[in-house]
Length: 166
Image (cartoon, rainbow, N blue to C red):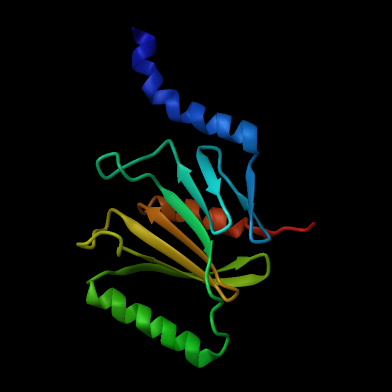
């Protein structure tokens, strides 16, 4: 009987441990090595990497901290186009009454990523669930959904991404 009560509490940790045993601690995507933390699992295909923290959930147990990395059309390199993109994003956030909690530029193995943390995920913006987006000029898009506690974990993972050397 006690085992039945304990199993749900450790089931996800067992799931993550098995995933890491089979896959290791790094996934490769679009020429980058991306770390997968101990309590996280990852799914990859040609279009994206989706990573999920299996030990934490919130918002009625339905939303786990998630990081999705995908390849988009590369951003224009000229200052005018970048400024126009930022202005468009700011107007969008204002239109849905979302707030920006954090803005950072993160170094990803010599490339600069412009990152922004907002509360735009929910239809009515909330301070409990946040979205983090990082754009690299080469088109790599890194997004995260979670709570404010996820912020440091996200930036820790992003700062450890490295270009793969064959």
